[in-house]
Image 1 (tube, helix red, strand yellow):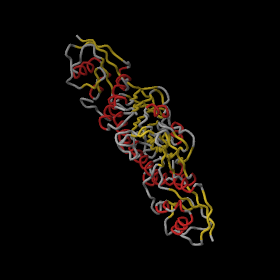
Image 2 (cartoon, chains in turn blue, orange, yellow, cyan; image 1 turned 120 degrees about the horizontal axis):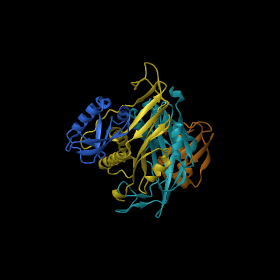
Image 3 (tube, helix red, strand yellow; image 1 turned 30 degrees about the vertical axis):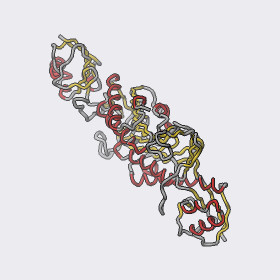
Image 4 (cartoon, chains in turn yellow, brown, blue, orange; image 1 turned 90 degrees about the horizontal axis):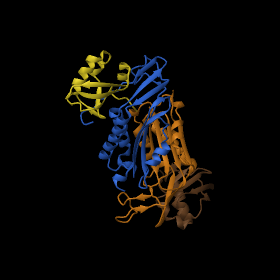
Length: 82
Length: 82
Length: 163
Length: 163
């Protein structure tokens, strides 16, 4: 198993009611697999998983990417700075 | 006769050695006529009269314009601010 | 001066943006021109260009609350600066600063500034590119608070692989 | 807010340019974006783009000495602002400020700033237009002083009737 930290921002944090979660995922889980697991385990975040942006170790990550060991994962909506 | 003040800036002032001159010109003198008179009366300014910019009462003025009574005339090279 | 000596400032801050100070920090002896963009909190947003306001009414904003994923935001700001240097190698200094926290109308929230020897080198385009990219890839979000409650401002861009 | 209430600042000054202050003065409740151009005294000018420097050498500048025909310069700055408003009616605030006197390298000498509700309204083009026009029609001149003596910087533009 892979122990990861998931940071949540903006609407994702509001929906989850927390800024971060520690999650166990199977080795070689992809980003898509991680989203599926969160959608299953956290009903409040299920809908958001369809459009969420994901970063792994501070770089944008996409569905097919494998989540590395001890990754810092973040989940957030499209950015709106400026 | 028309009594006018002529302000000189930048290279024109350096060549004339003065910031302003009071000049008498015939009534209905044009800008071209004024330049001709200055070229004749002030040898140091003769060459500059070929390319000088002229303003009358703080608006750019051109050769055929008549210099009004008691005008504030200014003479200067192309501008180089910024 | 070599490009490696060109100053690049990127930061997320809770402090007031000081344009004079930021400009001085990216002004080199060879610098003759700077293009600076700043964004501010709008206190009133007219119906035109707004999706939230009701017909014929201006939307009022009490304040915006900004947050950022700070370490990633700073990394992405550096990336924006790198992209600017790749596209406009004549750019000398670059500053990219986002203020976060609770920000009130008429307050500058973000600054992008690019300097170069001359103004006809693309500095205006470079600054414009910088703010466009910041709004696409730098992880910052804002929540608008007004008389009708609060809502998150929605971004529109989905980064592509390699961004 | 009606255009007649839009702030327009134009001035010739011997004081330091305060970007924070000038920006605040042209920021309205409806303002969301500002494009600001500043010019600075270059202490070193590379051969490229210079007509004065010898081959392969950078020209050094100790300082520039600026002068203006103040009342006409302010009138022409107002004209530049009017031209900007005619071309970009969405522009809200405009500031056009030229500093004169003895100005040293890395010092901002001129500022053109335009504000608008949004950044995609032409504010960048408006600021660019403003500095281009200032360098064409506003009666200001500068003399460069360096290790090889002093010379007047030559302008290139001849105003046409109606300018």
